[in-house]
Length: 622
Image (cartoon, rainbow, N blue to C red; front, side):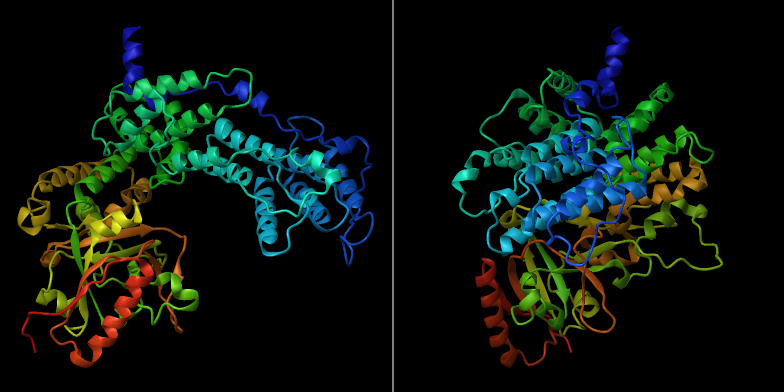
């Protein structure tokens, strides 16, 4: 018994579970709305020109929906994809009737619940959001034509959270319950129905969404669970699992014991914090498991828990877990992949430069600099004021970007063989490069428009503090010697003097994994390295002592102007510039500085940042 208890403490995340059965009963949805009993079904197409403005259109929509629903009376019933599309169309059309014609709000709520039962949550969400936007842009509608079905939205959010552990989807529906609807003055006759659908969920939602985003709990009301959660959350990524994690999971399990009622606010908090910590600590726990002689006993738990990594930087572990036991992916290979993810996280921690580099330099041309000044940030581009553009990886000057680390850890196994056709697919990776080298001739020549540009000195610490932003994170670049006895030399990595031996050890572990891993699983291995791939360069570039921020995203991508647009993203905050150094060969200094100063003053006034100094390079260079 003692061994079992010790095992539980060693792998608390893999052990964690709670009984979902009672929640399934409490959070049950109905697929048989009340109107089914008094509405005849009709399979005919009811759409016509001017639909929604003819009397009886709402009834025709319901007749078609009833035709579909009457065929599926069982609580386990499912609709075919074509039937679900038809039901979702009926739902959209009835929404239109409620907005503009004779549809009834109570009937719409029942129809919405049936659509949610059959998996039409995306359509429901989009329809509610679209109507809410419309009500903000036009005269306020009556209370009878707004979709404030808060109790149903919360129930759907609870289903996603407690039955599927899908925090992202849960937050979307909790967010619907927190929407504020602007309505016309209440008709005294209808006042009695005004509060029938809505509940006060705003403050609760603010707390839940903050926790779901990985923020600490900062409310005045607290418990020992939340205090424990904050302590676990603020720990750096661990090389060893925190021993107190098992105590936390025990407390959460106790809170989630079902009491026969709808989930409470406290239960929602407990489960969300559990999922956040699952994403933080599951990878190191699986890596720890990989060294356990009895690790094969955990295969089912691994497959089940890996889904918590879906949508994270280690999505490949969630995807590949479903293939464990197939011809190409053995359980042992999966654990090698978990080790890879763990080592990647540890290397990121070693390379993290936040808090160590307070001021950093960015060399660029005067033209590129102008794109963050007021002259270029007007109209649709006004949100770019004072912010840096972070360009796609493809535009970097090093042809081996993203390959240096792979070449090192694969060694002779690195695939350089020619293929019939070269793949041109590129990752969605965006990189911005900085250096601690201020007013440094090689940097002026290489990146400062051959010394005719400028060097922006960024107060990175103040910038991050003003914005309260966690991302993007600033990292050191590590320089490698591919054919030397030691890959990481202190002389090449002066900013990593305390860490270079540890990085060397971690790279050797990755090299051992590549030798043992089935070649078919190399795409997973490469994917799990993530940002680390773009933080290693050949030692020939070591004079730069480069720092980087990296985005891996498909969201909020922007394009440069012109016939051949380039891709970029932006920092989410304006920069605090400490100094703008003009290059040794900056043209027409005396005539251009007044305009530059005026633009900088205006930029700082609008962004709320301090005005930087404008100086001239001390380098004598022709």
